[in-house]
Length: 142
Image (cartoon, rainbow, N blue to C red; front, side, top):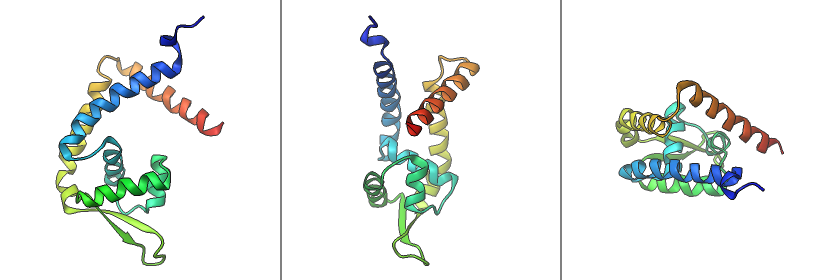
């Protein structure tokens, strides 16, 4: 019989807890949650996304994303503007505050990413990330 410590659910959940806690400690310095930080990171890659497109990219449902965006707007990180051609569509824009923090924020995120994976070789990092993405694709398809 397999020990509970060897069940994939346990292994992944404990790894997730560690990674989440690491990111949470750093993102709290910005007054954000790790999920809000991912939203900001996505907007740094492409500003002006609609809320729907942002939700698709981050695999977040509308209700969850709506609350995250509301808190980010309240914190001065983003603005939500109705699209000119369809008032039901919200375009998400960075604020001056988020632009000001861009370089520092991205460097912090990269350092956290490196720190979390620091015990792995370059090949192990690539393999882990590929396997987790593959695992996620399988669960999305089923």
